[in-house]
Image (tube, rainbow, N blue to C red):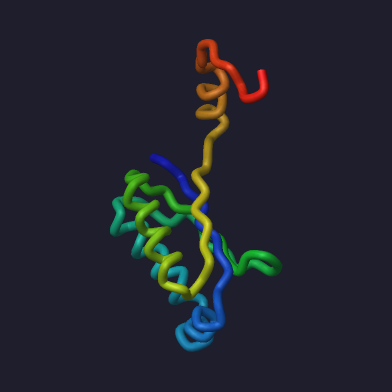
Length: 107
């Protein structure tokens, strides 16, 4: 099942929501969202620095999770980033693909 990391930084409005609802509510909502997409929430962490939180989700529908990331980004409560995660085995498959001949810019 495809695995994604979703991370982000809260705006003032989003941070006010966390202060009101608590951190557990955000983790529980992430789990509910993953489950509604037919997946699971593997982990959820709060961070210091550039990002305020990150979570790992297993979600079978790439289109749906991407649409979700766009909708949340448009909400203005935080700036998020959806990152597909690639297993070692998938990277082995990727690196063994024959691409054929092509010309790179400037060649």
